[in-house]
Length: 330
Image 1 (spheres, rainbow, N blue to C red):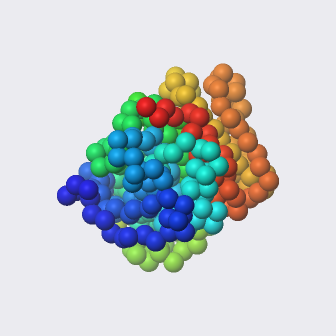
Image 2 (cartoon, one colour; image 1 turned 90 degrees about the vertical axis):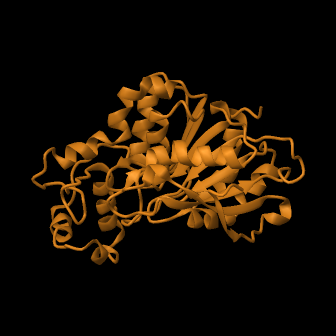
Image 3 (cartoon, rainbow, N blue to C red; image 1 turned 60 degrees about the horizontal axis):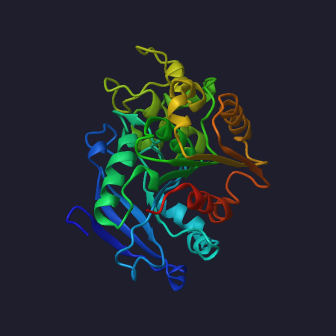
């Protein structure tokens, strides 16, 4: 461990008995420094090390970077996967051993959207550069694009596709689980916007509901405004330099995809899954249609489930086996 990283917990885990060890480490995030919300640039990552890591000191491993969803953090993601001992069980079931890394992307308004914004910070570069560089420097990784995968659930699925479009130089395979925010924005409920405009202190919004806070997070990520304190963003309907709704639309993967077709086509493998009772199913279907229309090879699965009830099972049975096939081990 270098001086830049600090172990913050010796994490007891039910998977330890099967040989998988779990570390939680504070790392620097230069890409997040100076963000206007005051989100901490020193963040923790959770690192799963496979069974042979402690005994085979000459071996290097592929890495999967796994992004959590909105209103959660990496510890919540880890707790969900622990329901089925997903990582250890995948290895026991035949998936090749790899390192799994979970960054924390929780922000003032409960989620970064994995976007580059002066308000929340440059989370695209944080994931693709800061975290990857730290892991390659401190763990025995195969430090090449062909050995790196990016996955995520919900907001993390959105982040997977967004960052994947922009950073095919870093990652070779993508797996988006129940991705959110794929379709261009059609606006926000006017009554909600009127309520949100009634706040003049960000601290007073922390008790708002899920969709209200998600609206604030979306504005901070997609329509930042450094000249509009104390929130430093524009809401739809504000008298802004450029229309916030248009800016939100421009951040939807289905609006971005045409610009990044060549990038997506360069991936070794892409997969999207979603439950048949998930309210995000229409957007996922449209993403599948776009990929198909553009001749981009990918896997698309609709399984029996809702937005959250099978994340651990899918990670165990589909996500890690997918990367086992897609990533090089040398």
